[in-house]
Amino acid sequence: MHQQNKERFPVEKDCSKFGFPTSFTRNPASGFEKMENRMKKQEEDLDRLQMTISHLNQKQQQQQLRQASENETVTLPGLGSMESKLQEQLDQQKEKITGLIQAGSNGVVYVRWGRKDCPRNTTELVYSGYAGGSHYSNKGAAAEYVCLPPDPSWGPKQNIRAQQPGFMYGAEFEDNILFNVKDRNRDVPCAVCRSSNQSTSIMIPARVTCYPGWTEAYHGYLASGYYNQPAASQYVCVDQQPQTLLGGGSSNDDGKLFFQVRAKCGSLKCPPYEEDKVLSCVVCLK
Image (tube, rainbow, N blue to C red):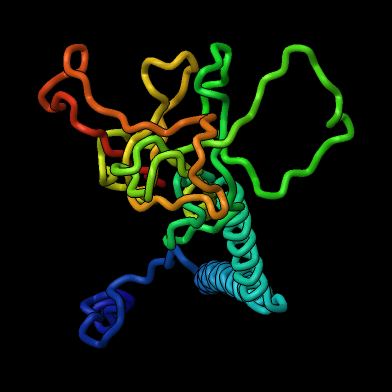
């Protein structure tokens, strides 16, 4: 009977068709273990979320600090305008200093021989005077021509007499044709001129025009003392339209004399120079 019951009620005989397992074995992961694993996973997800939030907070704080820094730089009161104004003032001071330096270095003085006035090319008259120098016959004479002022002022020792003095004479034209004066022995005027736009002057002999880059003050004819007289002299440029000294007269008082100058070939290269030609001259400024 027992055997029959076994056969009548087979417990493990093809129970799968009823949706049950064929054998009752223990599951290795119990319900508590599954719950524990689920909690661990949730904790890990929570940690990752917290890390993400912390990272986002840090980025937000950095951005806020950067914006605050930029706002602080921009909102400083008038910093950009103050800097530009200071730079503008500095540039103006530099320009003023440069102008003062240039003004101090500019300005040149020259003598216009044979005239009482200065050229009308941005020059000013310092004074109009009398040409003078040593006597042509004195062996120890000074060589240069001088332009004496018309209003001398005397020092306290004006009446002291030395035994071996030098002397100052007036000057006369010795060529009435070249210098276009009425007759010989006319007294020679002069003018001391100053140009405020230039800083250099040069007298160029044998030229009637200046070289490029230079400005002409005046031109005329070269003059000096006579070659066979004892006193030394120098070369000066007499204006091409000379005047005579007002009230000077034409008496032959001699003194410092103005003669024409002519070329002599030999050591002087000819050409370009030519024998016995009267030499011209020009005074140039720069």
